[in-house]
Length: 303
Image (tube, rainbow, N blue to C red):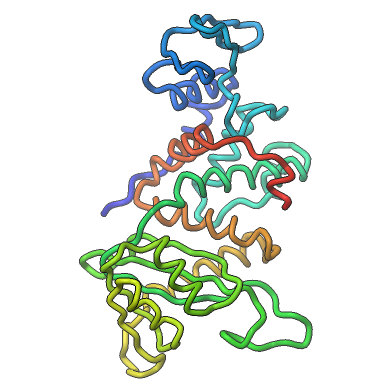
C-alpha cells in the first residue's frame, strides 16, 4: 500500500495558522453533520454568541463552546498552539518530546508535558481497539533501566516487560500492532492480551516459552519455535524489527520514560505505526481523536 504524502509545516500554517481557522476546523470535526446539542441531543443551527465564542441551542438554550467536552476543555493555551502540538506529535515518526513542544510553542514545560500526555491519551482512546488477525507474531520486549547492580538482559531482567503482537498481511509484510505493559510474563497475562487484541482462530507465532502454550486453549493456532532453532529462520523477524524501532523511539526521543508512563508512549508509537500508510491524514485523524476524547484531569495523567 503506497504511503500518502505528509502535510508540510508550510501547508499546515496556511490551513491552521490562526485561531479562527482552528476553531472552524474543530467545529467541522465535532459536528460533521451539523451542530448537535451536547445536553439535549437536538440537531439544528445554533445561535452564535460571537463575542464569547459560544453556541446556544435553540431547543434547550444550553450554551457550549467548540472545545467543551474535548481535551481542549478549559485550557488557557490557544487552540492554534494545540493544533501545532498535534501536528508535531502526529507527523514525526520519532515523536515529539515535551521539551521540544515547550520551545516550539513558547509555553511552560509543565504545560507542554500535560498537553502531550492528553494528546497521547486521545490517541489511545481512538486507536486502541484495533484487532489483530490472520498471521500474528507475538513476543515480549523489556524496557527501561535495570536496577543498580542488575545488568541482566531479556527474561532475567527487572525491566518492564511489554507484550507486543504484530499482524502480517498476505504477503508477509507488517500490518498492525498492539502492545501492553505487563506486570509479569506468564500464561494468564499472555492469554488476556491475546483475547483483547487478536481475533480467535488466528495463527500466532511465538518463541518456545512455555507460557505461550496457553494460547491453544483460547482458540488460537499456536506456532512456537525455539530461538536459534534454525540459523536461516525468519520466525518473528518482522516483530523483532518493530521492537527495535520501539526501543529506539523510547530511548532516542525521550531518553527513557518512567514506568508509570511507559504505556502512554507505547500507545503513541502504535497509533502512528498503524496509520503509517495515511501520512496525509495523520493530523486530521489526530484532531478527530482529540475532539472525540473526554477531558483528562492532571490527576488522571499523573496517577
